[in-house]
Image 1: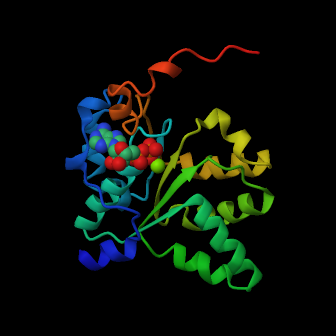
Image 2: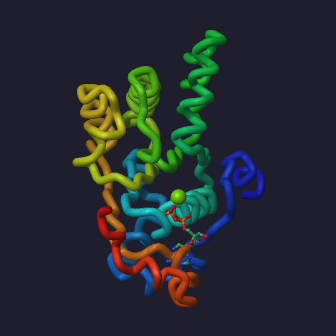
Length: 203
Ligand code: ADP
Ligand code: MG
């Protein structure tokens, strides 16, 4: 287990036990606990965690990854930005194919933070190749601050965006988190945001 956690490359370690479901009532705790059995990995299904910043998408993705590792599943975590950077370098050095194979090995791949940066045509092609290669072979957990309707803003190429979504969603569970940012909770309590509570007036 320790070796698998190391190989997973998590940015921080979080478990489901550390997740306060009471703070996020839009979440169906039973559904998350079902995902923690890692049956979705055995079935080659994907999970999409959608919601605004700070609502616990990365925490839940890692917690589900940890739960999968407890079921002897191999996991690899990367942000979309890091992944694209890596694949760009690999493509230049003529080892894209090899890297894509490597990225197909873990039974569960976690792609964090889709949508904070726009993806150009080449980035979309990389993502398409990865998603296609893993299609029906391994699971993906993807987190995004954008709903599907807004994915057009992320991708320069609408056809590729649709093709990627099509494969990701084919056998998948989407979890929409609608609550407030946990990060800002303490700050809000302390009144740090009170002066910003009114939207600024247009000049
Ligand atoms: P997101 O990825 O949606 O922006 P994170 O998962 O990074 O948000 O959550 C931000 C921080 O708040 C993390 O430290 C995370 O552990 C914590 N957090 C978020 N939601 C909860 C929650 N419901 N219970 C406990 N901690 C939470
Ligand atoms: Mg996050």
